Length: 280
Image 1 (cartoon, helix red, strand yellow):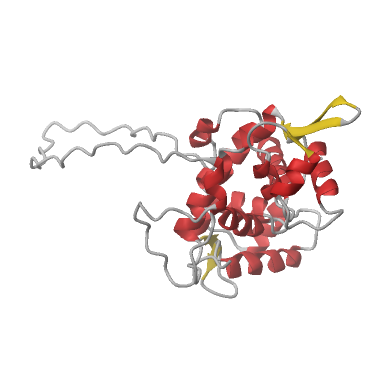
Image 2 (cartoon, helix red, strand yellow; image 1 turned 180 degrees about the horizontal axis):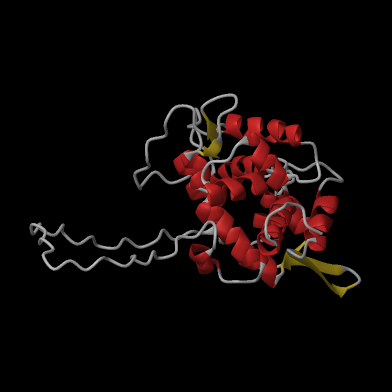
């Protein structure tokens, strides 16, 4: 069933990404999911790793992750049961450092160094606002859209004024910009910077390798083809310019799942975060 007035493929893509976010965003889910990185654990072993959970909190959270297909329960004997990642769950792990990278660059600075797990949780809170995925998709595709036009696309079966509460929230969160009442809406730099995150979630949701995120039709960065140039019999030659020195490619940072619970590294320089960026 279509949820927007967008083309069926785009509508299905938004629905899949929204579902993926809903699997991991509920409180403690990511921490439990990360605690299971490595060999399968017995329930008591897992409980010791997430000891901040009160009695009775772990079991329903664990069941929801099993129901989502991210964690599997293996009954070896009646008294020996273990929990571990499914193949699909393990494939989701590399998306989490992408969230950390986005948060370090775009979220407002905290008063203290934040563990990567908190960066992930703060980011997920912003991305799971109601209608957030659909609004972000439309703004990325169409650059600038009025509130009324956005409502017709995002919530075609609802009163168009219902678009404004989620829009105001995304503006307050720093993902969407506008010049004021009656003016069109567009993605902020932080909203536009979500490309790697949403592209990776889209690739994961259809079982593709995460490196396919760069080819996403909305959030990817396809290589632009130069347009045809007119032929001129007396076309002037440009003045030669010195070539810039070649840049040495830098290796990608090696992420370890344990790093997600530690303070984010400060070894690499970070872009300055402008005032009024996405709040936590």
